[in-house]
Length: 238
Image (cartoon, rainbow, N blue to C red; front, side, top):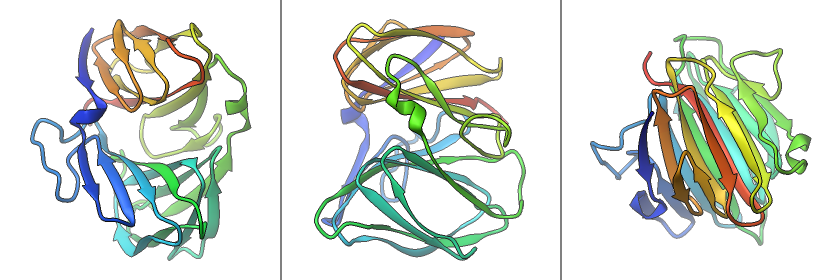
């Protein structure tokens, strides 16, 4: 087993007033040649957007883009004609493919919206752009990892054009689980949303992360009540 530890305070940071963002990997004005990606996981941004503010219409292509609200509501609009509000307890995915324009705004006039923005390199280029958004009611069940994304439209959660799985879970103190990595070519980027965990022997606090590869499985257990975690199971190479 190989691992890499990314403490929360090692992330890049940008505070624009209306946007307070932390970057797990090089992004925008933050550049660290040692933190360009984890396998085919290219971006993991931890964003807080002020009331009524947001990202104006801008383009993307050939990227799988996932948004996971942690607090508040995120308003989405795109060039495919989709207009929606994504809420805490939901997940949104876009396959940018041949190209799309979209905007994301805080839907509240009084409260920040906090969300994770994640980019995964696709396994197919120039696909027809697509959008999906679903609720995740299973996340209310504690002490269990729940699949929220996969490569298959027939599986639980949303799907993307990549051999990638996301799992999320909320655990009571001492809640435990064994996670089995989906493919021998894959690794897992474990990101603690809230609370604290021991993952593969590494103690992690809020917004800390651990990359794991060259392994078939690992153990995780929560070390404080109400701990939330995201596991991104992603190919380490194309």
